[in-house]
Length: 108
Image 1 (cartoon, rainbow, N blue to C red):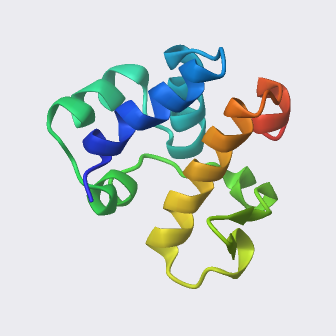
Image 2: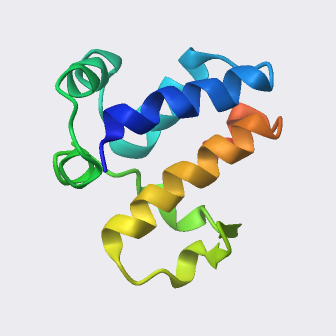
């Protein structure tokens, strides 16, 4: 699955709830360690999720604090590492759309 294909959907979901593209980018960069410039390059290159996470500079050490259910699955119980990382990102975007503060979303 293409990250570049899903990224606009993350933006749309956030904007429908009065949040911004910049907040989505901040979440993605926090989770993966990418800069906003490198994130845009990956989107332009239409990278898939596998390579997106495999090439991530630094998965945030606080990912273990991301818990809960997304798409009917408890995140902390997902065994496939790639699927779990994708679900981490989905959960963070959901929290943004639900109006949580960036401080809480970024587990500060």
